[in-house]
Length: 349
Figure 1 (spheres, rainbow, N blue to C red):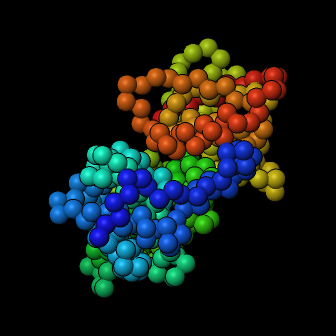
Figure 2 (cartoon, rainbow, N blue to C red):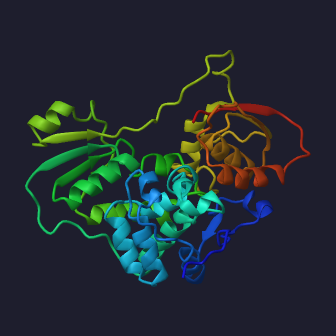
Figure 3 (spheres, rainbow, N blue to C red):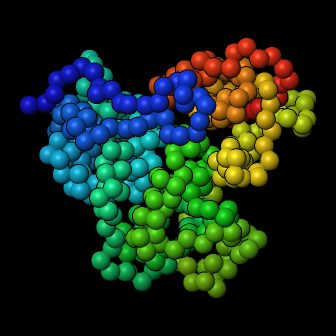
């Protein structure tokens, strides 16, 4: 019998006043008993709308059913048939507008916590040493992938599972793309999660070459004509910020969120044992209201700045409301009495 509770099993997380002062992961995730209890809320719909809401069409009822049976290895294999990055997607995908937004349980109650269950399965697989299964034999075809962000890693992983010989070329010195330079540690741990997911993709036979700028280090024509690649997938991401075109944008203390977050996330400016320069203002304004803005705001707060947020109202904001509210709690709980110099930070989502 399904667990007919109208509410999700609560997930444990850091208290707002505590998490506002550190970069540790905010959400602790489910333990085994919590995951099994939440999985029991799934109705195993025959025509599962949650699958339709998933961009990669994971068999969501299938993997959740495995969780209820405590077959966590089986659940991981079901997810791995469609996704190469379950530990990442379980943490940062906007489930409330995708799979959970389509969940039938959500019509009259809270939807099943699909994202937290996916995260649990991925984390449990890592603990148990379970890896995704690669192709049994190669098909002899070579594919190049430009960019090692979520698009590049997913494309490379899927092709490798089909038997292709895949090489990823990454411009930066570390793989992961926006997962590494854009999303902060408190939402997506780099060593614990991102690096492990990259290793899983490499375990499928994918080769990753860093410090290669396509067009300068090597051209597309050279990849095809000299390196013998039969096709090239370009997943170069959205690494360049957009500015507002207003006076003062070039002043000292004005940053795009792209630069600010890259200094903190990729170059570890938030850590005392790194020498990465970062502007530490006493008072800061963040322009924007989406996930990038909140990531920047939360990063500013952890560096002991007062935060004033200017939010641009959008008709349909591309933001995860519950995630935003968690970060707002941390923002409004601390650092409200100091009044000194200010800097302006511009963000785009």
